[in-house]
Length: 201
Image 1 (cartoon, one colour):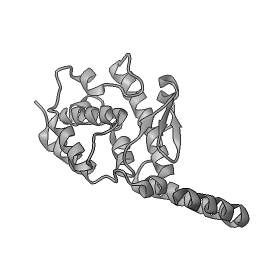
Image 2: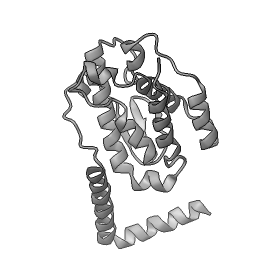
Image 3: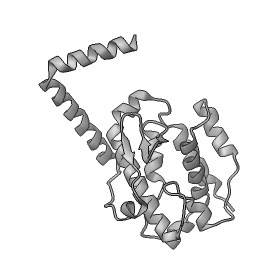
Image 4: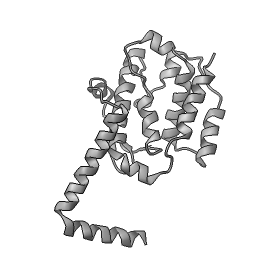
């Protein structure tokens, strides 16, 4: 039996995400990188807890927890229809696993009460700028990239704070750093901006 209420809640969050929003991707580049790092940590921790043997980094946690769990394709179809195009391979794989996971309701939490929700970091990553791709050992986020690293390395990684205040602080600190850097090198920055404007035209 699946939890349709939980899947509706997840779908609502994904429908409200900033899909195909370059400005959001740039504005949240640092926080999205933090979320990707925390997602990888949680994948490793849950993979160890469930004894998942293969598939790093996008482990099939729900299917390992309950091999009979499956969800109708209409959930992904509804999301792609709202986004206006099909999702990329990696994003589609993770989103499908998200729906399977929430379909389990609170069974994972009951069995592993001390572990964090494995997919919450990825939901927030998508909310803050849309899709990602993988390439040669990295998660690519347009304006930054995160190394996958090994599962063993990720499993011992300290957790990252991903509450709204912490994520906002990360992005604001990066904007301040960039502004300070540009203020110290006005000539170089002006030249770079001119080149960028030419490329846009």
